[in-house]
Length: 335
Ligand code: CUA
Image 1: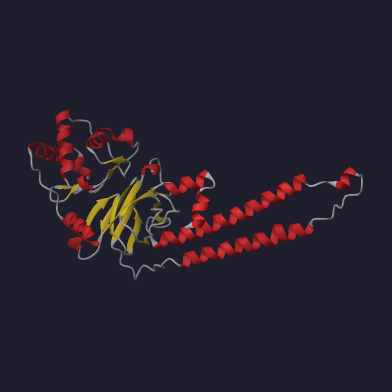
Image 2: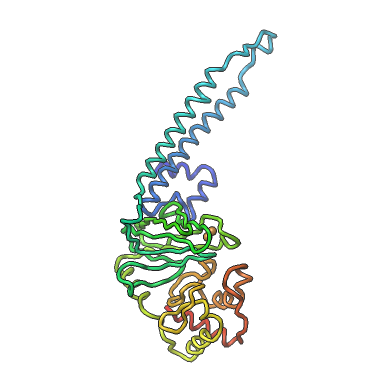
């Protein structure tokens, strides 16, 4: 898009906004495209207005004031035309046009009346992570995961948004605008990704100490990859295949872990923290604050309160080094 490339070469902040993986100006789905188009229209309009204003300012500052130089009377009553046209009429037309364009953009979004929508996914905001439940089909095909939502590419997916505590806001800028998660008031957002990829998201409503560390991701996959992923998630957790994983599983059960976390297929049924049945298949941990790898898993288990103070995850420090390695090996095996 030529207009876009022109503006990208202008102020640095526009360039920065467009370069990252969380840019409203880099839409990857139909809803985000509406918002992006409106944004560019507004930027373009305000750039034109801005240039005209600077030209007028420069003209006013540099024009000759002949009347002062020759001690002739100044026409103090002049300039009303500028105020009526430049100060009232033109701003009114511009702001009214943008308002109408905004209403048109809103009308392009599907209206959900609750009764006629059957969301495939239910996302519950919690301080400070995303509880994700796939609720399509019969109850025995429901499953839970956390902080990572998979969708098939090229198809609209309705997501029901709830909150278990305070107000959060679901925001994946390349796919859609913000939608709040309000306690007691389910909302529905319809997202669609036109290209496969991982789209980063962020809680967009201040929700307490770790609001900034409440990230999520949407992974858009080809329909066949998506079906494979669904089938994998439906399975109960993998069984340990070596001594370390076996020991890790045992530790998970006897240490506090099982009080708060579920691992389907085992006797761990806690619901305070994320479902860990397939934790080994997820890209991030701690609401995507950390990359999911051995070092970060070990650090998170033992020092969660240093990494994310005030979160529900306590420091679980009563491990020997070997025990911690075994626990992490078990968690990583849960693909
Ligand atoms: Cu959840 Cu901010």
